[in-house]
Image (cartoon, rainbow, N blue to C red; front, side):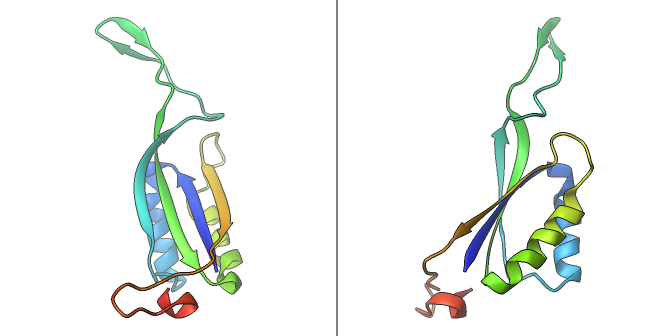
Length: 113
C-alpha cells in the first residue's frame, strides 16, 4: 500500500474529484487546506496603500491511500485533472504505508482501505 499526497491549486479540486469519480477511484480521500510557497512565489497586493507580497499561498492537500497496483492510474488522473501548464500546479508525493486499520471492524491491510 502507498499514500499519495498531492498539493494542488484550490480551484482544481472539483475537477480532480470529478476525474477520480469517472475512473471509479472514489474509495476515499482526505482534503486539507494548506499554505505553502515554492517556485510560484507570491503576487503583489496593496493593503491600505502598502505594497504586500504574500509569501504563503493557499493550496489544497489531497491524501489517498491505495493498493500498489492502483498508484500509477491515480497519479495519472491527478496529473491530467489539475495540470494548467503554469508555475504553481503543485506536486505529488508517494509514500509507503506499513499498515491500515479500520477502527470500526478491526480489519488490517488492504481490506481496511
